[in-house]
Length: 80
Image (cartoon, rainbow, N blue to C red; front, side, top):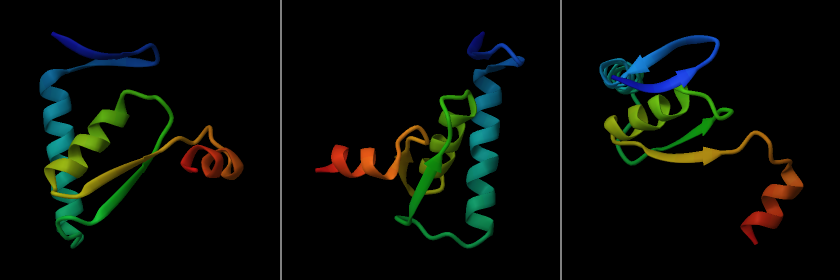
């Protein structure tokens, strides 16, 4: 079963996503990040995006998503 497809890389399976997000979560906890800490994800729309978000959530962090296509001005307008 293929979950995410990227034309440059082989597709990720459900098991790949599970393993990679859990590994990322373990690394976050190993460096000492505490539960309920805000973790920012600054990525383009790539297959690794949900892996990063799931890893943050698995570690107990609160993910906040940053769109790299927004300029500072666009971000201020969107938040107001």
